[in-house]
Length: 62
Image (cartoon, rainbow, N blue to C red; front, side, top):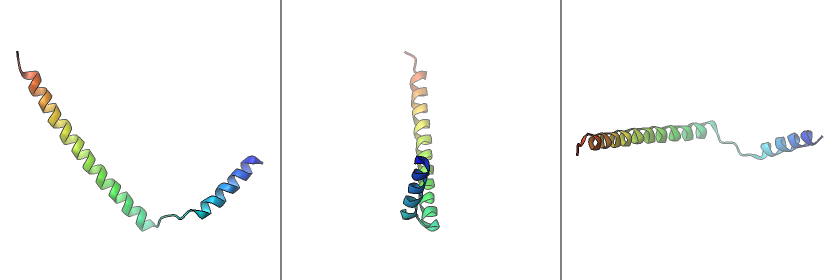
């Protein structure tokens, strides 16, 4: 009986939620994808720069 009550309460609460429109969801997903691409490029560039610096220090013979 508790499970049935829980599911009924959940269903009632979900009817109260203001769901975003399809247009808004697509806009937010687009923003997230653009940010993801920028972060990926930034990490790639920084990784390559740091790898170059480390290799340069490793090649110095003392």
